[in-house]
Image (cartoon, rainbow, N blue to C red; front, side, top):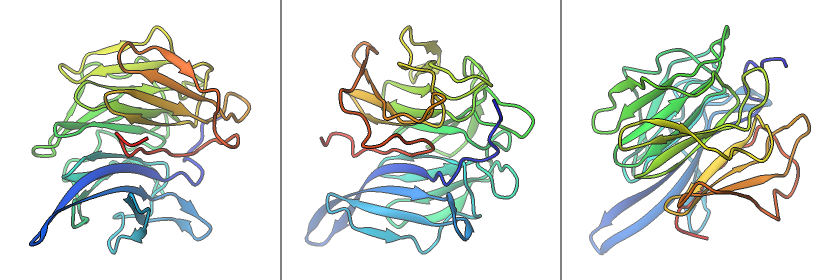
Length: 273
């Protein structure tokens, strides 16, 4: 199986809830963000924000620090969102941080431990974000980098992914555990690795994806369930697998995506059906 050097037209996504205090009271404004990717004009620095619940779109005045595709996104809800890694003419270690609610961008002085593309990210809001897997240009990696939201300091977990993987997806049950699923080691995977946020220990779910899949996407309704959808199993699929956080049991939705789709992205307004 050939290694893709960067995801095709795949932006990273992050979701946040932030508060804007006004003289008249406190207005809750929630939003989701799409950043980077590839356009007909080349790699994009663009970051688009969609506000909940009205779905109004705005484009941030300051986008990514470089045009980047094949990157990953995560958010510390109420505080900041992060885009990390990807391909910007070469693979990068860059992690850009967008502070909520003003959306001002800074670039972390400590980025990823290696320049990777086609990686994945998830977050334990209020505590830390995790960026895992990817391809360096010479090898896939098992690396999971952890960024503490208190000071953006980076550590690398002693236990990474169960296999060196790119083209994977990730989601989190904030406060409890994060999950990296699917992807490719040279062969497509059904594997779902779970990282307990209490001690960052890794376990691998007894029941993985319903089929070995790469180029998929994932999102979560924290406290309830996470979802992995789309991708390719050799054929592009509509499949959406649901993992109940109570016991990590998997079901496959009777209604999948509206069309078979790969290299997609996902996000969630957690707590809203």
